[in-house]
Image (cartoon, rainbow, N blue to C red; front, side, top):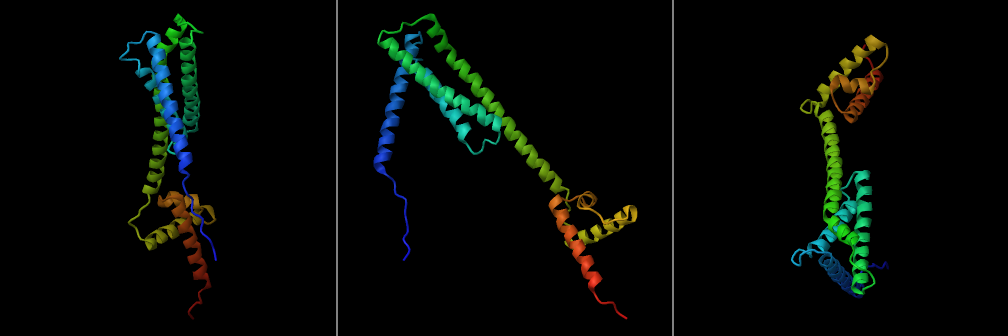
Length: 218
């Protein structure tokens, strides 16, 4: 007798991951907010610094791992930005802990770097959005071109009429070139898609073989 294996959730693992994620998020947010305040950000605006870094990481990771990102260039750029965002969060928290432990002093270099993060993130994410939108536009254009090519196909015409048109095109082609019509010439003559032209050409050849094999009336 066969046995069925059902996957079960390990709630201890889920609980551990949830607690760890919440702890990391809260501590990272607190560290980055404190770093912003220490470098001169107003107290009311200091939460915007960690929010900027977290949004940067989430957006880049989303574009990187999303199946809808069809552009390899956009995916690679998003991957490097996701890595940079995680690194930025790590470095920012490390700098704050060094400042809090009085190992490091707040110099003008730190002030400038912290203040430059939001506009730099905006520029990088804007470029990422442009790359993704260009890839999406190219994909849609390719789909429209394919649809336009197949849209030339007279879908309202019955198969018998297309077959008759194909037979006439084949006869004209043989009279001009001395050989049967090819799929590409048939596609251009009937203004149909490549797949449809292949199907019609097969039907045409099968019909010709059937006509040759039919017994003649005496």
